[in-house]
Image 1 (tube, rainbow, N blue to C red):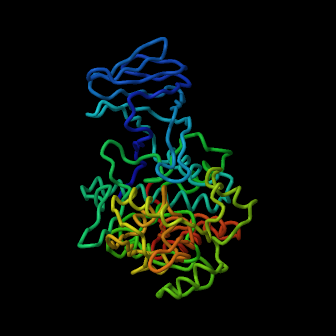
Image 2: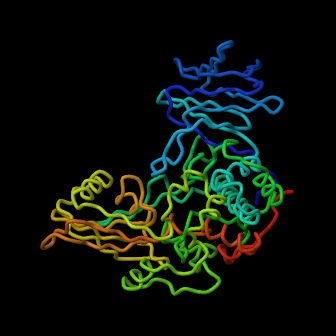
Image 3: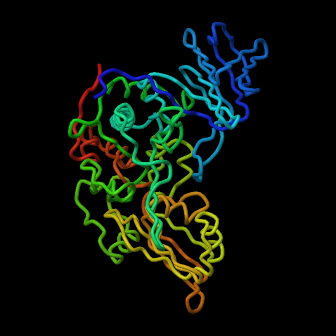
Length: 445
């Protein structure tokens, strides 16, 4: 098990013909120094070139390292966040640590930020949630984020293959089951977006709470059966969390099981009738909040653009949904007739969905693939029931999806955990609630 703080590499920008940014302070590059000012990096021939306006540098072996001196930082322009989600946008972001520019065989550049793990975590918790949130929640989030990353690093160091490649699953006659992991980066340890953990450098850090949460929990991780826990999290469960195997590969993870997001128990969803009653209700649970004052202190600004996360509704004209399905799945269903859930998890999230059209019927899963097929970006979750309305015979005019929750629903419900902290629960109580069977252990001082 890891016993010292690792230095990690974070992929911030990929696949760019050129990268623009700014140095704030002095950086060492190939035995020389670059002072504050704007820069542009690009590939010419087999070398990486970096021009600061006053000096030029090159890295002939496809890597150019820019090492900060005396606390210098750097900014990168047009960093994309929320890739393929409905909040996707570009920002200028500022980072501590080293800037590593890498060339790939396609003639494009990758910008990697190299820094100590604990420095990285202060940014993660500020990027994932608002750094003004309750301290107990921020501490719980830091432990979960640290645990996930350490578990991934341990698997990599042990030579254990991640749970597949970027796109994996199984495909049979009339059935496509696909799930997506977060560990499949070859040129760096983690990316800076939701695929791994949100990391926006120093850009979102407000006040000192995030740093305080990191310092208070330094080296602390969730552990189960002599291994660091692969701790997962998401925005809102909708009242009940789900099991690992319903979002990823078919194996049981003892600390990623279904629990009620409340001090009392809810019955797991077993039938379609139960799913409909659940989704159309608003049970009293931790993540059921519309308190704007609290949410402003918990969610980053772009997440607050999503207001109906606990219960939501999406309505599609049939023709529009047929076009989305064809675009996102690559399958021409013809005239869309119906969508029928075949398997749900205990949270009500659909694991297998049958989509039937006049030309063919296909069963799709797991939860993220369902969300991708049924939206130009992503549905908030796969916990929904379908109403086909209007039309005559087998062809409805519209499909209305009534849904619950935001995200895959496995592990820690971020909004629920924040509300627990607001109600006075401690970091240990929050982690014990969402990660049953896990224990806390300090892995390094």
